[in-house]
Amino acid sequence: MTAKELTRIVLSKEELFILDVRNETDFNDWKVEGESIEIINIPYFDLLDGVDAALEQIPEGKKLLVVCAKEGSSKFVAEQIAEAGRSNVFYLLGGMKSWSEYLEPVKIGELNGGALYQFIRIGKGCLSYMVISNGEAAVIDSLRMTEVFEQFAKEQGAQIKHTLDTHLHADHISGGRKLAEQTGATYWLPPKDATEVTFAYEKLEEGRNIAVGDTTIRIQPVYSPGHTIGSTSFIIDDLYLLTGDILFIESIGRPDLAGKAEDWVGDLRNTLYNRYKDLSQDLIVLPAHFGKVTELGEDGRVMAKLSDLYRTNPGLNIQEEDVFRRTVTENLPPQPNAYQNIRQTNMGKLAPTEEEQREMEIGPNRCAVHDK
Image (cartoon, rainbow, N blue to C red; front, side):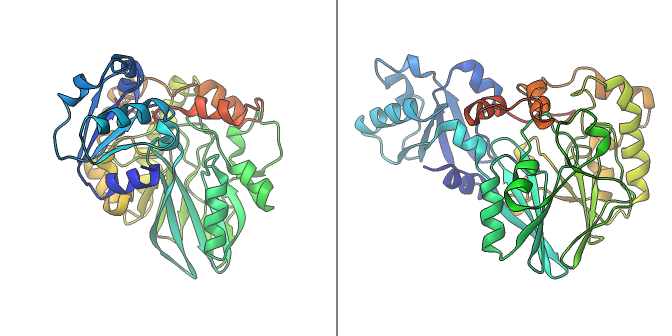
């Protein structure tokens, strides 16, 4: 079973039983999740002498997927289970590494002369966007799997003119600069997040509207610090608010990934409780991450009206400032895997190999305050 096929199962909420044969620590850190997914963990080394222990826990008649880190162990176990007489048994091609890297594009809505697409990295919870209008495209918060964006733009008959990062990412390696180099596009980055970068970029500042065909990505007046000091949100076509890692569907951004939690907590509160309050409450919020499968809507879309989030999002309903400060600085989830090296890579200070980049990104994104 490919990661794409597994994604379709998760998004359509089909029933699936998963046997994850990674070690217990890796399983507890990060696993395949879905509304109709049932999953158990039996480490591979416990199944080397036979799969009887697994057969006792696997229900008859259900579609079974065996999962491991890279593929080999799950293929061996799946074959053993099939030989024991079970049918409808699969293993995940490429293992959890392929699950971590697969991107599913979904259409968010029409724009003037084009459309807005969301790319769901379902295995890691990352979200990227592509604005297409009259043969031109802009990619926002691109992931390092840049060939996906190039191929999609080509299929849509569009040329990528701009790549933009809402902030300097700490959970995944940005593909923005690489994609710009490959396509001749302009790479944009908030200058307050770029004080240590080693490469040239265009300054993403308030008032610098970016035209894509007949659509304008309007940056002013949504300088929105708090997750990072440079975090910048985008209003697209007066319909959509791309919030980066400041505001999610069920949580808010954490301010600690650059070691500046106490310094940035005031900025975070001001952005969420003042700057965003001044915007049209009819804007559709499109974040750069999701933390839980419950945030996936129809066809997997991650989106919500800003006014609805002010009613339902716990991070937007902490009235006492001291309580807010404690919430976003204390008892936070673990920090993302290798986040310091990821930040250094996104600054251009490190140049890890492709395999090293995969290892750095393994695991969930952990960018939100409430994702525990």
